[in-house]
Picture 1: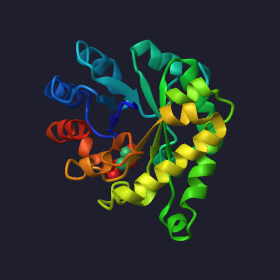
Picture 2: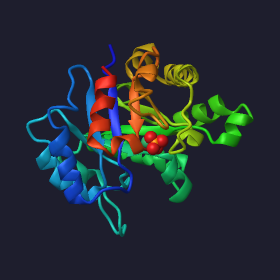
Picture 3: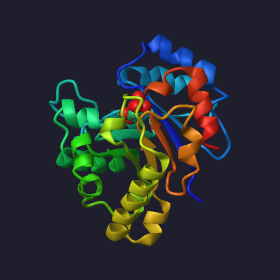
Picture 4: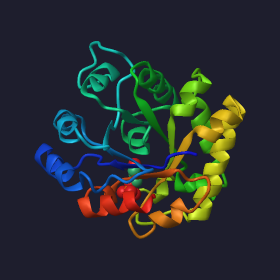
Length: 250
Ligand code: 13P
């Protein structure tokens, strides 16, 4: 049985004070038996949130990491630093990083290795652009991105990872994929994992859907057999909405 995982990707929103207030409001509420609840906050929020989530089952994630342990990389944050804070998850290869910050399949793969080296669970994002979907390339894009992300990892690592299938045209647009469509693509991504690592791994790996998920549609996605949760942007920012998302994943 795969434990569903709801992860809030706050992107570049909230001050540290607002973030701490959010955790105070959701503590004990965005915590439901049988659902993992992860808040992926900006780096500077993480030390304060690490204290704030103590005594709860809420987990913390970062939104990026550098592939090196340390070095002359101005403005970057390493896996060593995240692990030291008690961060458990890290988003890797989000489409916004691929589009605006020159993230490539190669840097995604290097970051996957760095995450495992430092005991962090990657939430690795794959997904097609609108023109790729219209050209019938959705599965091909997901196959290439997934294959590249997991290159050189072993089955035990792959089984622990989380993949987020986020069709780019559905992010922040209010236009979500249909649940059945998302289920089909996610089922295909699971086959890609199976071809790489075997069926024991593909049966274990959790694959989320992301893209305009909200309290009104979370249950529809969760009803699908292949979908193991959601990576949520906009609707994860408000405590009441986040609590409903976690409850909806039960
Ligand atoms: P929205 O939920 O705002 O569409 O964002 C999705 C996303 O990019 C999560 O990583």
